Image (cartoon, rainbow, N blue to C red; front, side, top):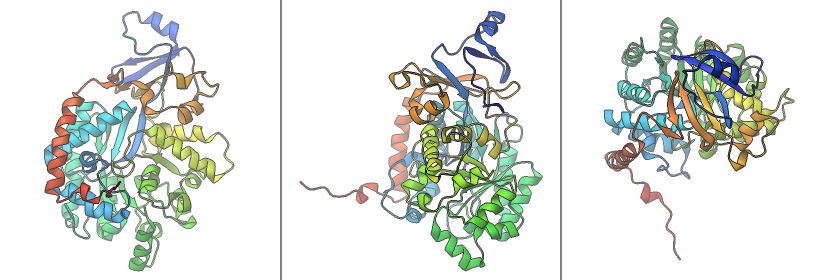
Length: 445
């Protein structure tokens, strides 16, 4: 996924510490490094580590697939997810993040952007360190309404500073300034948070317009559409990653592109929550016009899965459906979005997203020996996006270290974590006053 989008055959990559130092013919590199350990074999397809640009690591992870799918999306968020977050303990945050990142690693994801609803950042950081992956973390940021960690502007900014300080010298995890959403932050908080991110050379992220109702309410409140209003506040720019932006019009689209503001799209979440992405979403157009786009998986009660190949396949289909007169197959765009394109949207294209000398050694080894890969296609990218799944991931290298081998995480006992998570799920639902069983349909025979 370098600038030339090269596909190398019978090749090898040499890693020293956490960096890629050589790429070339397998026979030559193996012969010149007789003492090196070798990962992979003739059936391995090696791709860059995948980038998940929007993931809630806590809260929903312990109650995955518990929230009824037939209720309104706002009810699912504010009557279910938010109370669960309010009931989360520090230990809940750690096990939730660890499980989520372990699942992500087994799916080939080596970089995750947490979407800003962490209560105990230091516990989530432990999850990153345990699994061995990299990413960005934030903390709750909102000053409008009622909910966990709603605070004054100064209180919210203090939480953001604490995360930045927590990760200040961390080699692989960075603190971002995170706000919950455009309709849950005052003008003062929005502008102050943006300035804080710029002053600390980091990013700002928040949710915007996942469903139509938020847009109409915002127009009623401000007299303007959300993107136009935020642009007027001077907050848009290359430092900003907006989550969702499903319900934007053509003018907002052009404003986001011209300001170099990035979007993280989580298409499976929009479909599960019925938020109108197939009718109103403009992410394919945004990308085709040069917008900085990335893909995410969102939460375990929206996107549910951490399978970025599935997400990329879905987005490839949405692009195909949009019929935009593209200059290459949609599968090639889709692979870019979860590798180098995702890195560019996060401002990290010099560090991750492609297999190039000098970059961080984040790589995924795909097993192509199975029946679904036979025969091999002359276009490996199309076969990867349309035919593969995360179950084909055999090994993962992150920061030069082997963290997944033979489809198992090397750094933790996932079975023990799963047992603990079951107990925590029961306690968490009880403490939040939620009972999923009461929503299940009654079946009679």
